[in-house]
Image 1 (cartoon, rainbow, N blue to C red):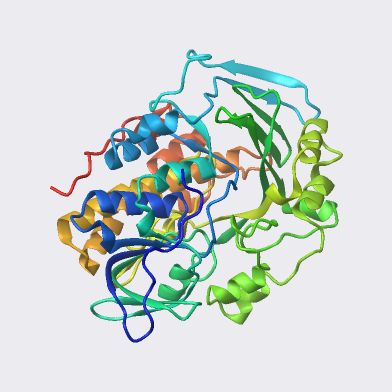
Image 2 (cartoon, one colour):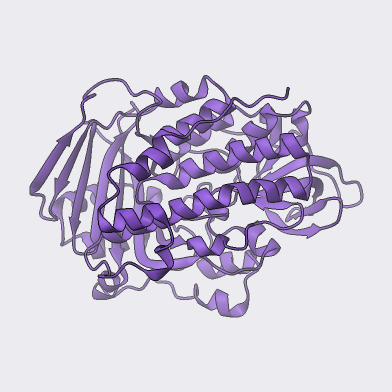
Length: 460
């Protein structure tokens, strides 16, 4: 895996723009999956280009779950990709539930204990490991780093992308894969920030001398912590969360905006207010992100969690400051898709840019992989035009609304203080209603995860 890629195409000066078939903003897993899927379906691979502000690919981020539906999407992109990804992961065969004081409450062992991971399993993987596996499916000449989007101009026959280095490029289609605080979304739809759920999260990875195949979950009140091994290289990932009330109890307030850490190649090293300004948000929206403390993410996490759990406190102490990401949990509600589309003109979105959801069962990344395959299918069938993009969006929305609603229910039930009554806006969704009332009997997992399949992508 090459960890540094420069732009092979020198994006054109203002007066001499080239025309691409598709320009993808964002070189994370969602953007690279979209690129790999589109390249698989075209006879002109060079016309599919990815742009990102980062200078190089580095190990960063925390962990994620690849589930059966995600593996099905990977298999549509390349039949060898699911096993390649499965070979990178640590099979999580045992789940241990703890109280905050470390007492073991329950241990659950799956039948395939200690067996190698397969594409049929739910597997734990590092964010950057999945990114790298997908980057290997995209030619180096199609990935353009150190390209920060300034703004875009939509025209009838193309979209012009303006970058901060004063270069521009025209594309028949633009795909925003630039995350929850998508600049592409804000400049296309101008529909404001996603909703803050009231939960703040810290994520990190660290080396471990004793990696294992166990997932450990600690919970109490509205506090939740999870840690588990990823891969085979002695790496652990941990995620902890706290409510707004716990932050206030520690004398802190939530930091609004993107993840905060010292690794500028993983997340933008800006204040939330700066990020809001770059995303094109108005002054009122920017004001939501103005409040910051000088404390690092590690110091803030320790202040909230340090006296509540020795297990978590030890994990925080063992972790390098620069690897800890702090962010609020932001989502968009299922009714945000009620208009039947999430793009405009020749611009569409994938992954968190389109449908950020609660990370209750790990569907966020898996739905981004599904987006990539269905976008490629729609463009192959209809061409590089707005009607193909609206067809892609409208075909995805019914499934995504159900999944967003179900993940919201699962997320609410994960914390004490869950409302007594099911939120009215979720009652129209079949799976969410069944999960709320305890009558699901595994149907949501079967429908959303196990039964999902895709035909292989090809240019023919």
